[in-house]
Amino acid sequence: MPLFSGTFPSKLPNAGTSIFAVMSKIAVEHNAVNLSQGFPDFPISPKLIARVNHYMKKGFNQYAPMPGVVELRKAIAEKVQDSYGVRYDFQDEITVTAGATQALYTAIATFVKDQDEVVIFEPAYDSYAPAVKANGGIVKFATLKLPGFHIDWNEVRKIISNRTRMIIINSPHNPTGSLLSADDLHHLDQLTRGTDIIVLSDEVYEHLIYDGFVHQSVCRFPELIERSLVVGSFGKTFHATGWKTGFVLGPANLTAAFRKLHQFIVFASNTPIQYAIAELLGNPENYTQLGEFYQQKRDYFVSQLRNSRFDIIPSFGTYFQLLAYNRISDAKEMAFATSLVHDHGVAAIPLSPFYSMETNEQMLRFCFAKKEETLKQATAILCRI
Ligand code: PMP
Ligand code: GLN
Image 1 (tube, rainbow, N blue to C red):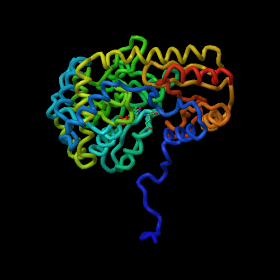
Image 2 (image 1 turned 180 degrees about the vertical axis):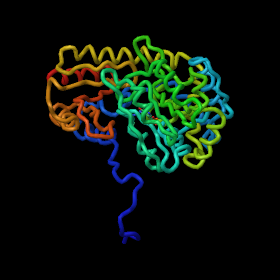
Image 3 (image 1 turned 60 degrees about the vertical axis):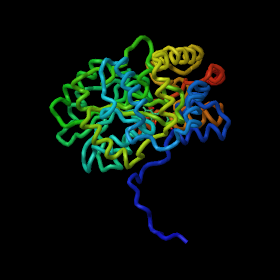
Image 4 (image 1 turned 180 degrees about the horizontal axis):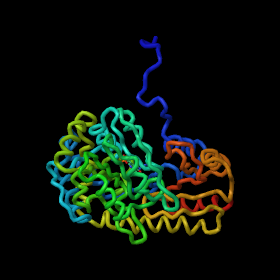
């Protein structure tokens, strides 16, 4: 017999199940080609697996230090310096997390208090707004503008008030594949300089950037660094999304505050994986070649759709390619995505769940982080629609 028969209060009464879980489940049930949730379908480095195995056999199976294994934090410091020319101190400016999701949640829970306002650009990755709301914050949405899903800084200027506690940015951007430019970061710097606003920069796709573009990390902007937390994920860098290992960079004062919550949210993340990743990060080829690797996949996917009725919305980074279907159907995105699985056997993610209000851009997000044969199979179907 239940001990409590009333209605359970929820901090997120309106939240449904994440669209990624929903679409992946439908894809499995219908045996569809799954280009919905973002994850690679090819094997990860055998060396990485061997090294995790090595550390497990050697007995590295107990709790890691709360901020992360020293070897990994040192390797992250090197990687960041190589990539962006700035040195974060491994002792008090780098924290290893159980994936980027935990890093983002912990950062939001650390700094956002009751009635604090947080600016989020939409379409937005689905975890930001619920994390703000669960911590009593108020989300102020700014809309990325078409074409190109760019930020309108005049709009942001109007949204910001003395209650603004945080601005969350994401580049390369999920779900659109758009990028922030150096100019965008300058605007952000000007807007937040001399304020108490913290910038939370989701850079999990930092190495998945195409067409010769350079990733405009917050780490390249010394003034911004002082009030920013930068989030990364090894799930993307090592094609191992299921390993849920990530990190946060931040100046010592922000990191100290972050760790106060981190220690009670997760304490530490997986030990043998941290040691193994530390070794592989030592070889920059493991991340400097990712852009080229995924660009080939994007190019293959797009080239195979040349004769389809889908329109390609340019993507310059991430695992994702938006396709517009307005020449095929005027259905709403969720209905079109569902029929794509049921009637044709291809799963994608509608764009609408990335918005707070009802939208219908008639676009779906497809994940091209797949083997060529998977992309071939999916595009052959898409070309027949
Ligand atoms: N941010 C963005 C933009 C993402 O796309 C993802 C996952 N794909 C995450 C954060 C979460 O990363 P992790 O799997 O390391 O928690
Ligand atoms: N980030 C992945 C995506 O955008 C999914 C992560 C998740 O399932 N929460 O598809």
